[in-house]
Length: 281
Image 1 (cartoon, rainbow, N blue to C red):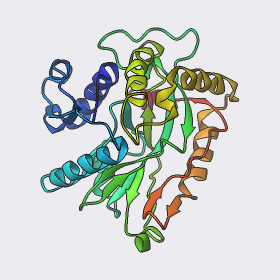
Image 2 (image 1 turned 120 degrees about the horizontal axis):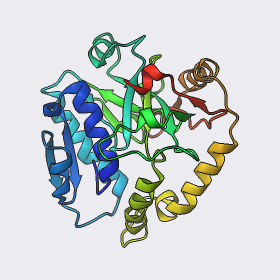
Image 3 (image 1 turned 180 degrees about the horizontal axis):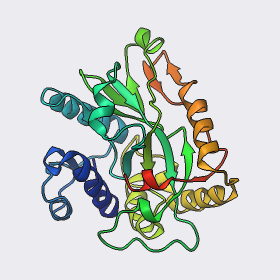
């Protein structure tokens, strides 16, 4: 689901069209936007009206879970991400999405989240260029270790999976090794500045239960992210990645009142550099 985040959507389309085929991509447009069909010419675009934003996150989950359930009647698995999220695989472990998903016993799987950052001196990402090869610096994130693929009617909610409370206590938290969610929000300062204007407009507009402070004060949020990122100690991938996976995969959050299974919001302890094999996936 997207609204005016054109730079991120172009990255999303290029990535998933290459791995899955553009004819298998579906974009829910939150408001009419003729630019989307130019950026994603072979994807299916479904426009939704934008006449009210009350209960933004709840409404969004309801719409997307309904659409996801419909796609699940046609496809074996449905992959669902935001426009600024790319699922990347370690090709030494998973050559492609099919080999990863075919062997999964669960009806939903998670990915190890990582924030991709533009650092001082990084080159500009030219039009039509993939972001990741030019942005190797990352920090692992529990918040973005999201559920991203589902089948058999499994619903996603609040970065996790929605379950009956009794099932949430015992349902397996499946986070395979070598599966990453690259969050591109901070990968381009130029694109972030443009997108932040729309985020602030939404969060400070009329309505109830709108997105929170990260959207209402996006410039402050961005400054804090970049400052915190630079303050992290830098460590080799072979040290940082296993530790992050161990911390996040072994202690999920199980909300038995709401019936929700998701990753703990564990903060990063280091920053590192993505290996070339993942950058070029």
